[in-house]
Image (cartoon, rainbow, N blue to C red):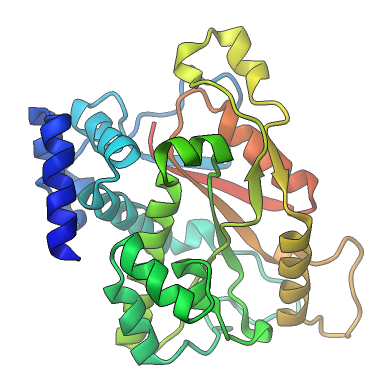
Length: 309
C-alpha cells in the first residue's frame, strides 16, 4: 500500500505541482507543525458568533492554506496526518477545555473509562493507514469505518462521554471528490487515540460518530458569497440522523445511571459533549448551523474545533 500511495502522490503532484508553501507545510512532522505554523487569530469578521468554538492555525498563512488545500483536493496522507495530530493533541492535551460535565453520582470521565478492544485488533486498525486497506479489513469485520472499529463490540455501559462529529458533506460532493476530508482528519485522530490507548493499556477517551450529522443540502463555497448570502445560505443544510441519535442517547443513558435510578427531565444528553470537527472556519455560518442543528436535536453541550481560521 505504501507503493500505491507513493504512485498516487506522484501522479497527483504531476497533474497539480505543489507550490513551495505546500512543500514546506508537508515537510513538517505532525508533532512540530503546530509550533512552526502561526496560530489562528481571534475570530473576526464572522457572520455569526461562535463562542463555543476554537481554531488552531492561521488560514491566511500560505503554508496553512496549502496544507488544507492538499488535504481537501489531493487527499494528501501527509496533510491528513498533520491535521489529525494537531487536532488530536489540542483535544486530548487540552482535556480540561473539552471534558464533559459530571453530575452527582456519576463517575468522572477520567475514571469512568471503558474496556478497550483487543490490542491485536487495535494494532491491525493502526496499520490501516489508507482507506483501501481499511475498507478490506473493516469489510471482513462488518464495520463501516475505523471510528466504528474502535467502538465495535464495546459494552455501551462503558461508553466515552466525549463524542467527535466530523463536519459532513453532501452525497454530491462525496461523489465529486470521493471522500470527506473531515473524516480523514477524524480517522487519523482515532488512529492516534487507539494507538495511545493500546500502548498505555488504557481506553480511548473519545469516540467518533460519522453518521450522526447529515448534510442534506448542497451549497457553493462561503468564500464566493457576500456577507448577506453567507448569513442565510447555511440555514437548513444539516439534519440529525434520528436512528443514530436515538442509539447514542440510549447508550449514554445506560452508561451514566443516576444515583437514585430515576431519569431526569430532558434525558441525559447533557452528560455527553459533542465536538464538531472541521478543516477551516471562514465565515462561521456552517459551523453555527451544525452546532444549532445538534442542539435542536437535544444535545445540549456541543462545541466546534477546526484546524484553521
